[in-house]
Image 1 (cartoon, rainbow, N blue to C red):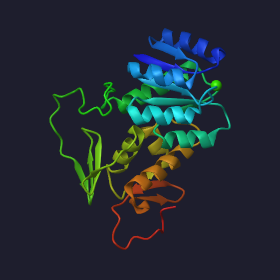
Image 2 (image 1 turned 90 degrees about the vertical axis):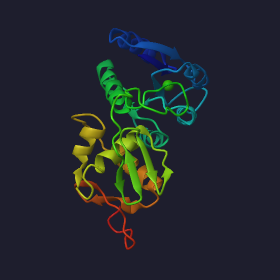
Image 3 (image 1 turned 120 degrees about the vertical axis):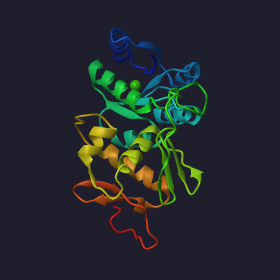
Amino acid sequence: MRLLLIEDDDRIAGPLTEGLGRYGFTVDHVRSGAAGLADATGSPDMVLLDLGLPDMDGLDVCRSLRARSAVPIIMITARGEEADRIVGLELGADDYLAKPFGVRELVARIRAVTRRTSALPYTGSEHPEAPVQAARPPAPAQRLGPLEINRRTRQVHLDGHELALTPREFDLLAYLAQDPEAVYSRQQIMDTVWDPHFFGPTKTLDAHVAALRRKLGDPAWITTARGVGFRLTVPGPDTGPEGTG
Ligand code: CA
């Protein structure tokens, strides 16, 4: 598995490259956003992106990468940059890791992101069209009112129009859609859609819920069960803003 590491600080990149190598990863290391975007044309399996780069805002690098490919992106951020993390996730990054962190923690994130996104492996084309496991029998898409969720192709259609969801947004929607109207706790969601035994702030969940509500065009699709978690609901004609906060 080939990782593209975009990180200007050699004190971080050096040990990371060496440590990831011990876990069997091949690491291409570049020190600027421009070099990262150039190198990304070589179809890495995943991008590890530092947000504090000398030549470009890391968020712009994230946006540019996502505009051209479905390559999984893990952002690496300094502490205290929570706003950046949330924006990055909304721009399509799949996960983030705050400095300082250990190689084992990063490897765990890489594996978790790989598991989540493996149904649509990065093929180098802009829009991978089919999963590699072509032998699986086609499963019908799940229909929820005007919403259609196809777990096999990881496509979501609303009123016949395909929604552009990030891998994590799809996973979150598909998870909530397993049992519409059922309330899933924040911890259940974090454990399943993010990492098992997720520990730490769950603001990233709120950011993804907000992004999904926006893409679904009606905040009533995902209602907040205060103090508990979230549930998916097909909005009725009489749904108001109540309960969506
Ligand atoms: Ca940096």
